[in-house]
Image (cartoon, rainbow, N blue to C red; front, side, top):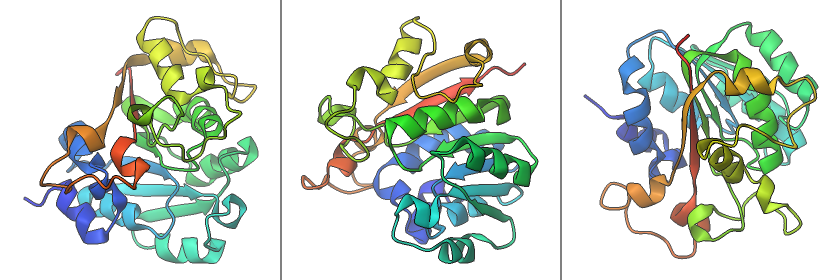
Length: 243
C-alpha cells in the first residue's frame, strides 16, 4: 500500500522533505479509510491538499489561505484554481483576523477530525487560530501546528515568522510546554471570546515533535546546512478528549 510519504513526494509537498509525513502516518493512519474531515490553514498551490485527498480518499479536505493579503506571492484566484476540485473545499481568509476565520467556518458548516496549521508561522497566528478553531475540532480529533518557530536555538525551530522583538516566553513552543508541564493553557494572542477553560478541560495530551531530526536518513536525504527550516522545524500535536 502506498504510504503518505510516497503520496507527498508525488505531489511535491515539502511535508515529505521535512520528515512530517513519516510522523503524520503514525498519527493519522487509523482513520485513513474513513470519511474524515481535514482542515489545513495555508494551502498555497495545493500540493498538500491533493496529498491529503489521495490519502483520505473517502474524506473531505478543507483549506483556508490568506492569499494576496498574506503576501505569499500568489493571487486569490490562483489559490482557488489550484485548490477547488472534487473533494477539496477552499476559502480565502487571513488567519490574523477573527472575522475571516469565522466566515470560513460559516462557509464550511462542519467540524473536523484533523486540523493542521501550516499558515503564516507567526506565534501570534498559531495561537489565535488554535484558540479559535479548538471548538471546531471533533472529540478525539488531533490539532497540529507546523513550524513552531522561535529564536531559542536551532533545535526549537527556524526563525521564519519571528521578529527579533518577539517575546520568546510567548512562543508557541513555550505555550505547549507550559501545558505539558502542568501550568495550564495561556496565550496573549487568543481572540477575546476564547473559553480557555473549555480548551484545558478537553485536551487529552500534547507534545512537541522534531520530525526532521527523528526522520533523518535515507527517506528524506541528508540535512542541508543552509536550510534552517529543514534542520530544525518543530511540530506541536494536541489531542482532544474523546468525549
